[in-house]
Image (cartoon, rainbow, N blue to C red; front, top):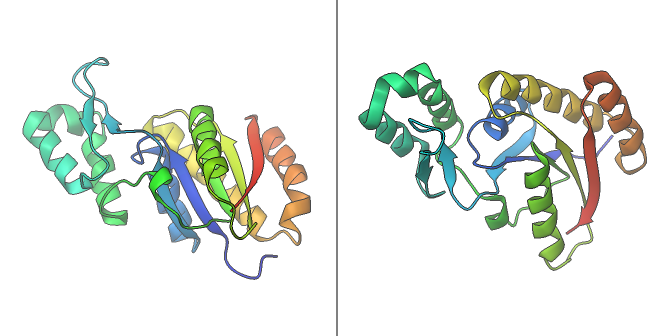
Length: 194
């Protein structure tokens, strides 16, 4: 078992739904967790699929919430976006980009393959200093409220199992294989170094 609590990062595209739901559940279970997005901007559903609401990562969840209330409170209440933003602002002030964070983690969990690729690209472009390993794991989670909740519980269960392994470096592949079979979802896994 690791000598310290696992330092976990959960990453999706906009740091709104999937990563924040997992952040919420993991923090309630006592994990040292942060959440991030990898996109260049934060995108939230708009009045039509081709008209998303686009925000800068510097925009607070409170500002996004107020902007959407002003635009169409009924629409954004009905589709659950205001509820999601309300949850988010109770967890942290604003979304964060993974590429802007220099903190080191034991485990980075991504919620879609494109985000996994972006995280790997960022980690591999950094100068290696400590040669501390970081396990990057992807589990595909559809970007809707129900799947985000199911995915968050799966991520939490995975983190709990990893936290209780005696030798994370040597047991990871077997553990992920068990989770693939149990969840019927493919997992991707790469080890990078800081």
